Length: 286
Length: 172
Image (cartoon, rainbow over all chains, first blue to last red):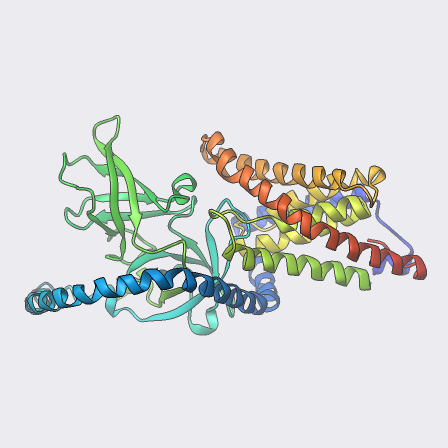
């Protein structure tokens, strides 16, 4: 509007050059500090998030309805099977309850009471997903007003989903563990061998994650073994289920193994997630 | 002024739809790129300056929500908008071929740049995989959406221009 008043227009060539220089400077600044990110994302969150909130609930409502129709038939069939299963499971529960009593005693002995069931959590809804097709990030409808901070872990069901990388007053951004940029230090639950879990775009589309640098233990680690977050990770709380070993191959150097993990969380239909309000560095301080 | 607000609103609406509605209705995890359609369309309809500004702000929105560094996508979108502005002289409203070709090429260029800058530089060399599973599907989906979206943008633009001719107002 300034231009119109003064009857002065910048030729597009120079505007392009100007904005290019501006962009490069801002990129350099944000790469090293987070100077601009705060105020700008506050404004953006204020304007965009309410709309995303509304529209994504409409969208998910519609897709829910269509899914429901499709699933109705399957559900009826499933219902029958499940009823039979219930009987089976009740007997199993009785057995397990005895085991659990024993386990809780043992846990007290080992003072392993810091299981992730005890962490304080809040529920959040996924309101937007990455607009491009290259990465897998999403936006949740809880922010610093609800006590969310950067680096808090996010779970869905019993599985790890990712961690918060950016927070606004009423929204937060989550980098999921299947994202190409993500690396998580994990370990095999049964053998306590450590490994690196890294997202991969190629495997993301088939719902898997890659792991590498697992010590070659000659068949000790089997397909289906549980993979949890390790104790040495500085961003992720220990003992959160990541997934199950899907396939495992020995590396060329014969010292390490790599393969794929089937994540425990369902990333295709992510709607409701839990944010753990405890951070790793807080635990260490205690 | 009014025109700028309307164009700004269109960018906002496209971004919101792209990050919510079209993520729910994505096919095989692929969603269309509405912002490229918008940027390219305003580029060849209203010239270089409008194209680069629309591109800049579209990219900035993406950066704010899903980017690592600010202004990275803004830069890409801006150059795509500017590039499309070069074709304004051979653009006619009645001709649908040029817009389709330009939007397709724009989306292709955008995807290629994303691959080159965000993946190749992290030594991910499986280009053929990304080409077949990400770039081509996104392009096809975007073209399909363009068939619906483009007449709408054209309609809104002709309304805006109609107003402009009467009031001799600004053009961005």
